[in-house]
Length: 166
Ligand code: PNS
Image (cartoon, rainbow, N blue to C red; front, side, top):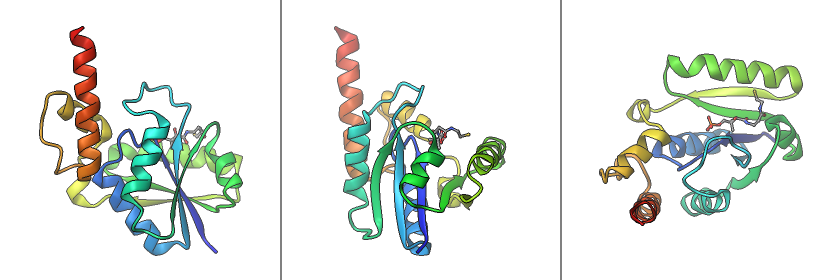
């Protein structure tokens, strides 16, 4: 049985991530989406909120499960009894960082392989950071996010605007 972990921050999950999840689920027996908890970046959504959002929008894919993790990715992959890490590659600029991560993980855990899926061209420019910036300036989000996620991002940004008005 091939079990893959698709790790990331998913703050928020974009249509680019969804494309990778759907394609991975077609290739693997089981896919675990691993949401990193101890990220140094200050997130827009709590880990709990991100888990809930991902569960909601992947509920139609039967072999996908969502979990959060802390610490080293390779330890989480072992805990999941998985053998593959999946990462999306959008452009050549992603490659250096991804290669460094994959090689480091392979030294720490030679039994785990990292595979890369090239992102659908439609989403090759897309990042969670860009989406947050668009949301902050009240831009339209539907081309980049699942409608449920877009709504939650709008609500969250509205809360932030209100807090900063005080
Ligand atoms: O979506 P992101 O932020 O690009 O995902 C990065 C992630 C979560 C895959 C990476 O930061 C990670 O694996 N962090 C866990 C800590 C770890 O294992 N570090 C060593 C890998 S080089």
